[in-house]
Length: 250
Image (tube, rainbow, N blue to C red; front, top):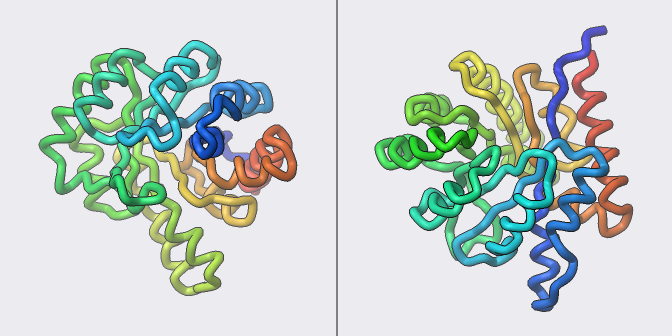
């Protein structure tokens, strides 16, 4: 039996803020949720400050920076406004994601190949400030190669299609997406990139992805917050971490 290196679990607390904002109240507090997640075993916290502030707000980022003892993964679009905020706070990690105002959630990966010149210039000051820059991308060789060229330290592979096909019982498509993710995890690692994954992962879908030997981190949010409604956030986090740990054991 071989036990692979641990995979970190980053808990995304965006949708605690979504619930808060639905009523325009002060609760539930995403910072409180992040501290609870930290105390229950989360290895990091992810928060996406969108341009339209639909869930996380600027004051939430202030609160997270002040309260957390574990790393903050600051998700954002590659805009001048967001760069200024990141350089002000200097979070442990910055994950660049595509963003459209009309979308419900992040759809697809960042097109690094198309925006290569822009992203290289955008990432440089973040690297100089000591932030670990991650790019949220599809599992495509050209995008992985471009991520390496622009100076990212990390790629986060988009697992959304794999999860969607799993629940739609489209087995052949699910298997094809899984194989792409597996192959690109190994390929990105071979280029010297740290490999993360996330989007749409659940108790049922996390195991096969967590078993990729090169994988270092999983970022999971919507499902954990949804499960926490019925079972409590601590219970949901502990079960997810247990499933990840079991997947790492051969």
